[in-house]
Length: 270
View 1 (cartoon, helix red, strand yellow):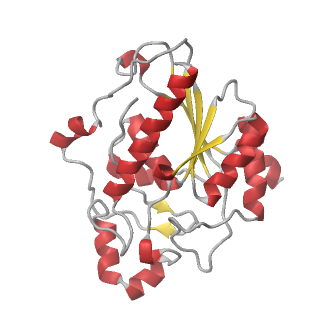
View 2 (view 1 turned 120 degrees about the vertical axis):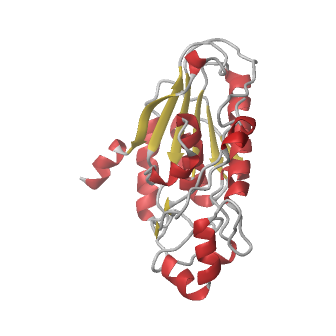
């Protein structure tokens, strides 16, 4: 089992609404990073069997578009017609992988629906985890950037400048999102490896915010740069850990094998 560090969820929201990047970096102070797990791995030594560990991070397919676009966090927006088509194509693509033993997904409808399309082609169940949800936007759910600049400008600009400590009204801070994303990944990886061994293949279907947090940590990127990761709907990002060494061993650091792969959608566009 390993621990992740922090990140920021800028870029585009689930509805495709562009978010301005933060005006300042608000990662953990350097002296806190080692204790948070940013500079070190903390791992389980319960290894069974051998092979290459593989982790597939899959962003859910598109939802029905909101009027004018807007922030979608915990709102249970369904997949649209395009989303269902992309989910099927993603399922076909991921079913061609050499080994996938388990699928874990956010419990929100858009991620769950995507995961279920994948699971049908693999003959696997889907483990739902609230910890993989997108950031909770509270009273800002469904509102676009322009709306918030008019209605709640002071707090909105404060949040943009310091999402680590400032939350939307009734929503979450970045620290809260980071904390539960860490818990979810720790639990999913530990559970899968305990059941299937060190060569486990695990797919996680979630949201832009939670997946960027995971990717940033695995790459050792400064967390304030996570909004620079373009992870599109239905995109597949793949990590591998070769060998049987414990995860804290430098020889088994995660290797990025594919990032935001959208090649399976080309047939849908043609």
